[in-house]
Image (tube, rainbow, N blue to C red; front, side, top):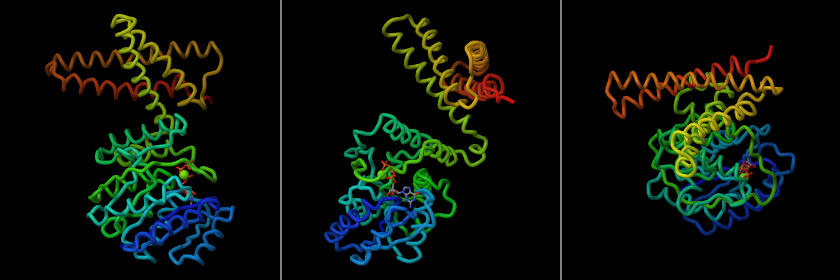
Length: 379
Ligand SMILES: Nc1nc2c(ncn2[C@@H]2O[C@H](COP(=O)(O)OP(=O)(O)OP(=O)(O)O)[C@@H](O)[C@H]2O)c(=O)[nH]1
Ligand SMILES: [Mg+2]
């Protein structure tokens, strides 16, 4: 098999030479396959390209593709994949980072399943035996784990646990050569979710092999701050189409996240209080009130932060308005469930369909009222 490992680099002069050496050792032990390394260089100012050129004089398997400028991870891979398919005729394309977070010793394990007929092999951090760094901040752990659960649910691909792994191998014939690489939904980190979705749609036989994702030892992270919102946009676009996400402003997405947080706080606290301190009706009242305060604050300091309420009087008036406004869909929802169950029968389906319609109405109502009245744009 001919395998091309594509490694995008930006300011990885400290890593890329060591990485090529480490890979050379692995290739020696696997003479049955023909390996190549294609470095897609984002025109780094730190001399990464020079290191790669030095290694090219030692190892004929090293190729260097220069980008005009750094254009994001997705753009680098699209560029690298197209170049590889045109010039190197690979059977398998591997995606890998330069910074040793992906262990070069895992490359052979990653490509082995192709001989058993698999088409897409994911180095997975969230399958048995895999893992993420202990030292990651709680925020990054939360994003990584939460993002994967969310992607799985929304995209309905239940055989995959790691949607954002950067260590993967794809069969070219019938798969990567069928992808429209000029129209990937994201030029950044979120390209991963898009390619995975498209490979799945093409009917790729997918296998996850466990990997332990290391900490970056040398060099700086290029994680972009907008990865989170961009990934959310890609997942929702894949599931609901471009029209839906075109309607979604960043405010709206954040507002939805706040809403879900509120729901978690509400149900979580309700149950905790119910079994510890309070009777059910007081527990419901307390958890509802605390959830409302939480969502009010999150909306003020996050979803609508550019329209933040200033001054105590304004905050208090807005808070009262918030409670009144938010109560309207709750009343309507209760009425709706009442009417639906009275007319169609008090079954699980009827009550839940009515409930969900009520929730959707609430979503639109609240967002409209919040953005037009409470956090209206100042003129
Ligand atoms: N050509 C190119 N390479 C990039 C770009 N952004 C990141 N890279 C490379 O892609 C790989 C992954 O980027 P990292 O910054 O390590 O991202 P990460 O692993 O999610 O983040 P850390 O855990 O902080 O390292 C590295 O080899 C980077 O040098 C880019 O815009 N262009
Ligand atoms: Mg990294």
